[in-house]
Image (cartoon, rainbow, N blue to C red; front, side):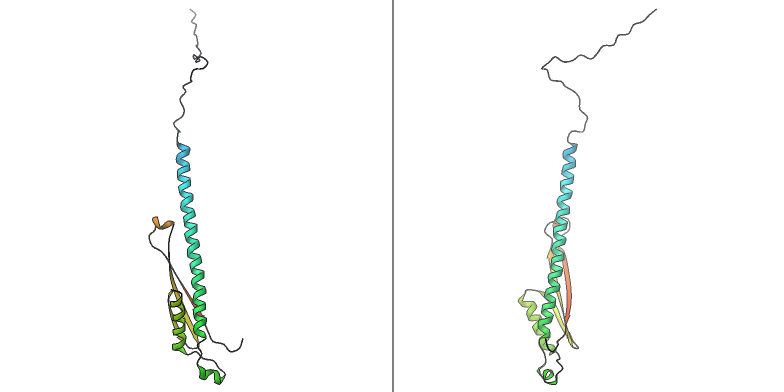
Length: 152
């Protein structure tokens, strides 16, 4: 006995009819990937911007500490000039350095010891972009020392 098997080809829809095919269940996967990637890029850009602000504040605090120290180092004891060996007038040097800090709305300290004056500037930088992740900000501190010299 011979059996015959017949294979039928799937019926094709007529021309002009919508073909309804099942698609894999990945609909929206690209949108999810792009959302996560974009969020990551925005957070990374925010981190870069805020880190740049902290680095700028660090350099600026260093610059201003040096300027305040030089302002203090200009306060020389007049008697030491006549002797030919310039010495700091310690109270006047500290006062001049603190006045410089106050004029520039900076927090810091000045201390004249020996023949030098050291100024420390403390500057707080608020985060702008990563504040949602970490409240507060960063505080930078820079110290610079200056000594009086004679001549140019």
